[in-house]
Amino acid sequence: MNDEVPVLNDDAVHPAAQAAGHHPALTGCPWHDVNEMLQAAGLRPTRQRMALGWLLFGKGARHLTAEMLYEEATLAKVPVSLATVYNTLNQLTDAGLLRQVSVDGTKTYFDTNVSAHHHFYLEHNHELVDIPDPNLMLTKMPEVPDGFEIARVDMVVRLRKKR
Ligand SMILES: [Zn+2]
Image (cartoon, rainbow, N blue to C red):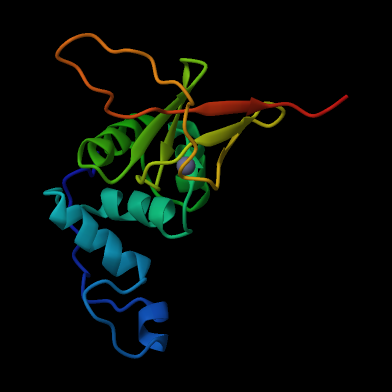
């Protein structure tokens, strides 16, 4: 509904930034950085994008489904629809700020860490966790058809609790 309402009070300084004294271009202040990220990706920093970006990027590396983010937004009293959450996540993915990781072909997680890495999927609570070793490789890669090259290998290692 309010999708295109721009942030009006952009001058407000986030308390964390204030406490840090001064800050250069990239600050670690989520509010400031989300604004920068959106603008750099060519997305207008609307109020809803800023609020969702704050939830997404303000807490370190995360793996969230649209439903999980929608629930967080609702709890944080961000007036936003599930459809808008989906749209925003897809826009951020297209802009290269998020990476999609699919599990089961039906569950899609959005990863705030866009660098190359693989995942554990914890079956008992449907949690996606980074595998710390970024150099994990298949020992033998499949042959690819002429004219193609492997863009990326997404490995999801499913874990269940031992009985
Ligand atoms: Zn990840």
